[in-house]
Picture 1 (cartoon, rainbow, N blue to C red):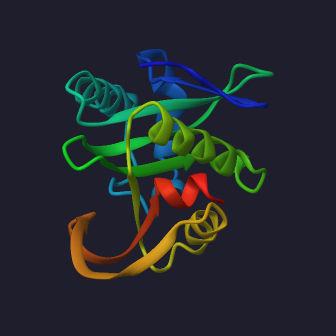
Picture 2 (cartoon, helix red, strand yellow):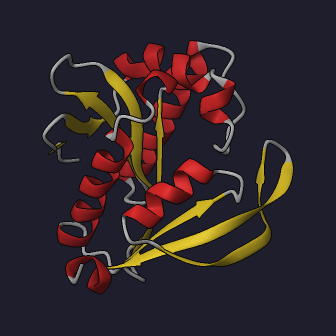
Length: 179
């Protein structure tokens, strides 16, 4: 997995050494509110998540990067493609940040870089995002990055043991290139 860079960030492969800080973020109810995980109870859960994601990456089914502040080398969150469908040239994007890093443009910067990588290096034609209707900050971010809301998928997936509705957003390569 290649390392990606922006002005302020580095997106690199998740490492087991990231487990402690990611546990801190993933144990925060505000951070995990719209994620498909319950708040973590211990660091071992973060280690298991990192190992699972890295195995999926080796299989070409997903990839996930740690988002690192270049200036301080601090891990501030993660982003990546939760599902990669190479046959149909599409992937589902996901991202999270520690609460203390919200509202500073880091998510937008990381996701924009991930989108560029998906379209230029991975050969994707379509990037999807599923978002709970109540997740206004994520919806705002996606719309800012030119994603189109395609519709509401009713009781589409389980999150924390309950079937939930999600909006499906998408961005096509031709729309990204032409913006």
